[in-house]
Length: 79
Image (cartoon, rainbow, N blue to C red; front, side):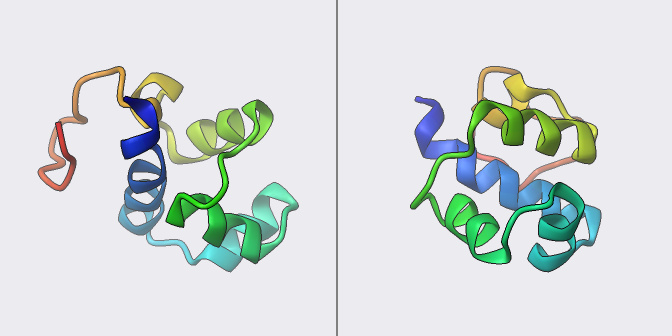
């Protein structure tokens, strides 16, 4: 269940926050290509990266995984 939405939610969180992949990569001390792979679904983030992304975007890990209801005000997410 979570695999279908994880990469989409990570990308939505980044674009809604107004950051580029490079800016996120710099903030998390990872490569831009790793962020691109995570957002495209070709690679899953490790637990540490997942936590850092949730904290940076001020969302819960449950929301990123698709286990929590959609964020208020965001109509872009799949249920």
